[in-house]
Amino acid sequence: MQVKNSNYFIDKDVQLLLGTLLRVGVLISSAVILLGGIIFLSTQSNAVVSFSEFKPEQVKISSIANIFEGLKTFDGLAIIQFGVLLLIFTPIARVVFSIFSFLLEKDYLYVVIGTIVLCVIITSLYLDVAH
Amino acid sequence: MTVLVFTLIVLVGAFLAGLLGSLTGLGGGVIIIPLLTLGLGVDIHYAIGASIISVIATSSGSAAAYVKEGITNVRIGMFLEIATTVSAIVGVVIATYIDANSIMVVFGLILLFSAFMMLKKKIDHSNNEKTSILASYFKLNGSYPTEDGVKQYAVHNVIGGFAMMFVAGTLSGLLGIGSGALKVIGMDNIMKIPFKVSTTTSNFMIGVTAAASALIYLHKGQIDPVIAMPVSLGVILGATLGAKILIKTKTDKLKWVFAVVITFLALQMIYNGLIG
Image (tube, rainbow over all chains, first blue to last red; front, side, top):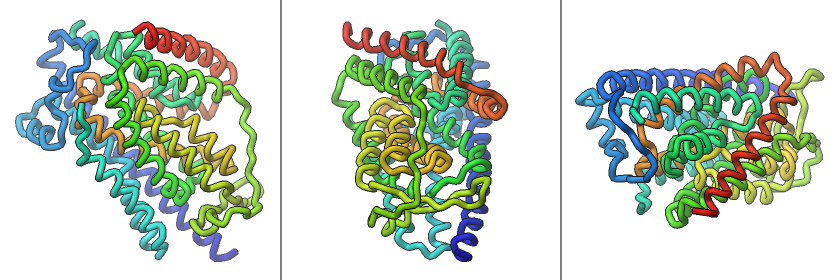
């Protein structure tokens, strides 16, 4: 029982830390998206947009390499996509963090399970699904 | 439509989606997609890409608030994420092979189901009878704080729950939604996990699952920054405000009103999908 309780409190600490991590992740990514949005709107707010037809080739900033390329020129849309990327990586950071906490607890079964989940996500990063 | 007008309309819509989504527990995605497709004539592929971003934003944003009231079972979450992430990828792949109209119809049906689940009275099935060998092996049984001290609970039917998560993940990847309603069935009804634990754990899983499919959608060109910008900012603001109001307000009446609106939107999506 004693062991169970102390574990419970370690878990609680880890979760509070995770909560902060998520909040900071959301905050930073929304700040980046807002910055990109302001830059984009200040130059192109009168341009006409239509999304009535799906044209994947029109979205130029659709890979991580392209996003970093666009960041060099301070392109508003690339900055937005970078913010989106940070948002996507926030829950992934939570998985990485959990793996480390399992490692500290010496729970190797869950180090393996966490690593499997991480590998699936990394696979999705490299998966090229035809249009 | 000019970029400025489009941005402002979507910003307001996404704010309301985030607000209502957090007040009713339905999430932002199920509202964002009808808003973009039915309201603004946006192609469903772009709507799904924007929605998956809003799902991640809501999940991560509310997780920070959840930490105080409930307790996530990270082991249950991580174990079931094997099912949800693999199946999310399967869902995205399926989406490439079926046409936009069929996706609209499936989405409408899930919307109807979510509205039904939102109104259905929840029953806590949890107990501490350790019946599942798998639950013990994977250390899924746990404990959580209540007013009467720390309470133990046992997890049941691990295989059934895992299978249900596979369905939830597939739909999440296919439609760009969090699949919260299906995850609740899997965890509350099949695995008999207590509410306090299942709500927060499901929220944890939703973010991770959505991240897996979001990366593929990004590469497929379905996440357009012009839409993603107002959607993410609006949803984050709305969901944050919603989480604050939720502590002080009863939402029963709101849920009924919302269910009627959702049902109407669902039928419209199904109709549009069927006539092409």
